Image (cartoon, rainbow, N blue to C red; front, top):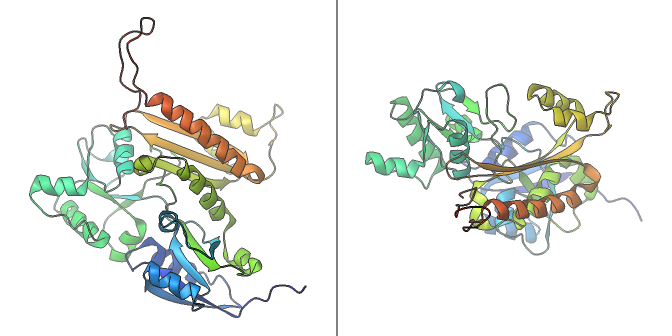
Length: 355
C-alpha cells in the first residue's frame, strides 16, 4: 500500500470571533508559515455549528477550536482531534502600574476568574480582590459582562482614573486593544518574590479537529506533541473532577528539559527536586525530557491550597495521570470533610479547605 498523499492546500475554519483567544492564536500561528509547501486557507469568525457542518460536508479539512470549548461540547460524531497548535498565553496578565509584589497595601484588583481571585489573595492577603460585576454594583455602575473587550475597556477606564489599582486580563485582549499600560504575567513558576499562578485547565490550547482519515504525517508536521500531551492529560483529570469546582482548579501539563528543572530547583532552593534528578555522583538520572503535571485547588480566602505535583516519563504519562487523579480525589476528600467531635481528637472542626 502506498503512502498517504498529502494535499497541496488545507482549508481551515476557525471557531470564534475576533475577541477570542483561538482567532488570535491561529493568526499568530499562520505568521510562522507552518507549512511552506502547502497553502492554508483560513476562514475566521465562524460559529461552532456552522464550522462543524462545513467540516462534515467536506467544505473544510480542519476546524480550529479552543480545547475548553471542544471539551464542553463533548466532541462530535465522525470527527477526531487531529493535532493541536503549540500552547500559547495560557497564563493571564495583571494590568497595573507595578509588579504584584510592589503594589500598595489594600490595592483593589478586579478579576473575572474565581481561581485567579483566590491565587491573588493567597499571595497578597491585604489586597481587595473583587469580581468586576460585584465591584460595579458597589460603585453604582453597570459592568459590560457580556463582552470581554468591553469589560476590559471598562476596567482600564477604572484603572486610569485610579478607582482601582489593577485588573486581570488575557494577553490577546491586551494586545488587540493596544492598551498603554504596564502588564505583568501571572507566572506558573515562582521566581524571587513572585507567586505561583497555575492557569485554568486547558487554557491556551487550540485544537485542530478533522474528519477521520486526515493524513497522520500532516498532523505531525502541523501539530505540537507537548500540546497534545497537555490536551490528553488535562482532559483525563477534568473528567474525574466535579464540574462544580472546575472554576477554582489550577492545572498544567508540560514537557520539561532536565537543565530547566535543575535551574528551577536551584532558584527555588528545592533540594528534593534536585536529588530526584541527580544520582549520588551528581550525574543527571534522566537523559530525555520529562512530563510535569501540576494541579491545585485554592480555598476561598486563599489561605490554604491543595497542590499535587509529579514528574513522569513521557511514555507512561497517561497511566501516571490516572494514578495521580485517583490520589488527588482521595486527598481532596480528606481536606474537605467536616470533623465531628471525638473523645480522642477533640471538638468538632470545620474542613481544612473551604471551597
